[in-house]
Structures are given as structure tokens and as C-alpha cells.
Length: 152
Image (cartoon, rainbow, N blue to C red):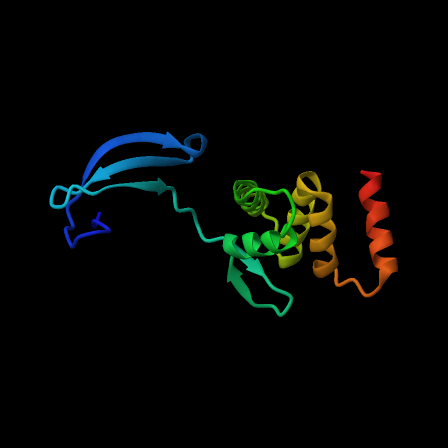
């Protein structure tokens, strides 16, 4: 592992411990040249998760896109970045489970999963995301979605 401060490419591991409930390993490292200490995370790299788009193209699942969309919907709301990151991780986990079960992952599947998790996180953010995702045209669309939200 290269030191992020100096050009040394031989850093030493000081401490290792599980992170993210065992899904990663957190390693504290030290550079013997400049004595800089930093943290790295080791995660299992699974098979790429491909998402079928409406156009027919297939693209790798991108958690950053989920985070960007959810962060936009949560702007000005009392939602922490950690909650958004956790939501994106849950959506990715849902998609991996669906893919393992043989279900094709579509952009629609991803959008519905985001909506389900947003519903539990923040109702205003849910309505904002739904308005863009479901392409609301007028106030009646908001009323219909609000009625569906209140049923659950």
C-alpha cells in the first residue's frame, strides 16, 4: 500500500479489525519513511452487478448514483449523510440478493427499492424522489402518491 503523503510503497499494518458488521476489515497503517498514519478498508469485491436500463443497455450498479439521487431528495431535511450511505448500501444489498435469486435487475427495480427505503427514512424525501422518479405532471400525481404513502 502506497503512503498517501510520501512516495514510499511499503507501509506497515499496525492494527486490523472487522468493520461494517464483518463486511470489511479496517487496517491502521504507518509509513516507515515519514511516520504518517492512515486507515484503509478491505472489502470483498463481488461480481459486478449489472442494471438493465430502459434503452436496453446494461451498466454496472453505481452506488454513487443512488447516493446522489437520495441526497438531492433529502436536501434541507434532517437526514444525515451516514443514513444516506446506509440506505444506498441496503439498496445494493437488495439488488445483489435479487440477482442471486435470478431476478433481472432493472433501473426500475433500483428506483422502487430506493423508494421503499426512503419511505421509512423521510416522507418528504420520499415524495421528492417519487416526483422525479415517477415523472409527476401535476398536483393530482402528488395527491395520489400521498394517498399511497398514507396507506402504509
